[in-house]
Amino acid sequence: MTIKMVAVDINDTLLNSQGQMTDTTAVVLQQATSRGVKVVLTTSRPLFGIRSYLRELNLHGDTQYAITYNGALLQTLTGRVLKGHTMRRDDIATVAEFSVAHHMHFHFLDEQGHNYVTDSYINPYTVRQAAANHAGIHHVSLADISPDFHAAKIVLAGNPADISAVQMQCINQLGAHYYIVRTRPYFIEIMSQTANKGTALTDLGAYLGIAAEETMAIGDGMNDLPMLASVGVPVAMGNARRALPPL
Image (cartoon, rainbow, N blue to C red; front, side, top):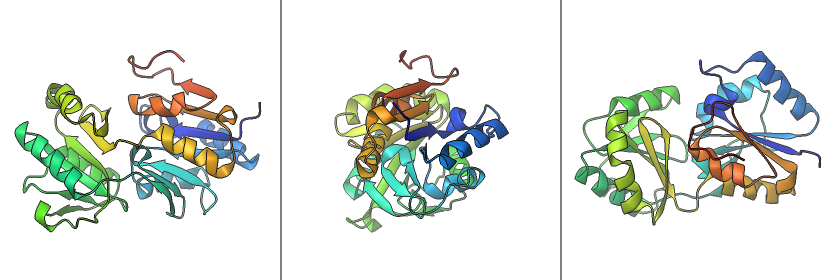
């Protein structure tokens, strides 16, 4: 069957271990696009955090798409949201209570990619992520957050040892109500229970009339598992996490 859509993770998939896209990768994906294949970048980042890669691939406009925030948003490359799985103030308060109890720091992002913290201390990993995404950091109190506020994701941030120590407690205490995945050694990301790359890719396939059997997905991490499981042609990178099962 002809492949009509290719979903590609970014870190350690689209990009090599030096965080760069090789010329070969760019050319192959541009050739796929020129043949009418939809090339869809899938990422934990906000849309404006991947603009440089989209430019390298010459992807733009309202008929090209990206899956951002680990599937919390399905967007056109103009920023129009086709499907959103977001959280509200009560969800932020729930994670805040957990973080205080476990002496962790957290931040959360809105649909536009702005970072927010409720603690006067800003974790260095939060600063690093904001800088990588070319985003600012805003300090707010929980009381000042509107009940209608949409959080795309909430992130527990800390050194890898601290994140490892709290990971199972986070899953055990919050996992029944949220989608939780460790995307980097220093991050645990918490999203709406219905948000993941696989759900977003399935939604995009339905929107475009492209079947799962006509879709390829390429990834390397645990947050790519739902995406790989949702398509007819899953491809796990050679550098994939050891916990990633054989496909």
